[in-house]
Structures are given as C-alpha cells and as structure tokens.
Amino acid sequence: MTTITTTGFRIHVISPEELEKVREGGDASARPAEHLLAEGGEPLRCCLRDARPGEEMILFGYEPVIPPSPYREIGAVLAHARACAGPVSTDRYPEDWYGRPQVLRAYDHRGWIHDTTRVHDGRDPQAVIAEMLSHPDVVRIHSRNVSYGCYMFEITRPD
Image 1 (cartoon, one colour):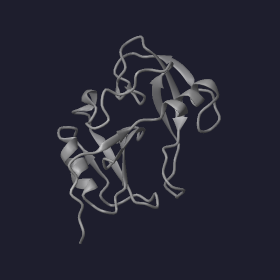
Image 2: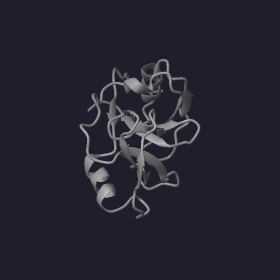
Image 3: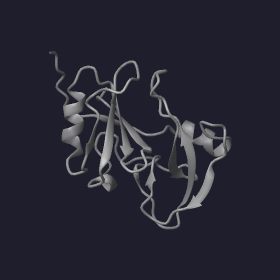
C-alpha cells in the first residue's frame, strides 16, 4: 500500500465570484437567494465563522464542485448578503467550528465517495483530516453539518 505523508491541508471556500453570481442572479437551481437576518451562530461559508446577531445573510442552494458523478448534490448554505473579507486562514481549521461535530466526506478523483468518510467530534479535526488525506486515493474532503448534511467547505492537500 502506498501512503502520502501530509503535514497540512488547504481549505477552499465558495469563491467570491460564485457568491457574486448568487447575489446578483440566482443559485445552483436558478432560484434567487433568500435574505435573512442572523440570530447568531449560523455557519457562514464565505468567511468560515459563525454569524453574529443581526448580520445580513443569504440562504441559497449550492452544488459543491466535484467531477461529474452520481454523488453530486445541491444543498442549502448561508453566506453574508454582501461581499466580506473571507476567511482569516485557509491552512487551518476554522476557529469558530472547533467542538462542532462534522461529517468529513472524502472523495476520490472520480468524484465518488471514499470509504475514509467519517464523523469527527470537533476536538482534533486536524488529526482526522491528516489521516484521511494520507490515503492516496482521497483527493478532496467536504466538511458537512451532521444534522442537516449541509456543505461547509472543501479540504485538499496543500499545493
């Protein structure tokens, strides 16, 4: 068995260009985004933090990028209603989301779900991610909410 030693990872958010398309025109289903005011604690996919009470958000259908496969899907996500500065870092796990259980769904080069997919409890996501990325067939991991299954962000090996 071949293994890849991984010392880090890269987090990918929904691109600012994609978010602008949603804000101006529509989501993955060509529907307009729903505008909401945050109650506080909602996970924002644009900057990878929890919303603060009163922040303006949009709720929209998003199709995470994977190769064409039976595992493509569209799900609801939240982002700021206007462009923001983005995440503080893309080389470490989002600070606000430690302690939050997540499904880490691994994919191979075909866009098929890999059997390293698992739930982590949020205490040491780096260790779980590193172990998953040590499998040479895993090319990307999607972090998803446990209860709703919503997409949070993508994880890949560093460039």
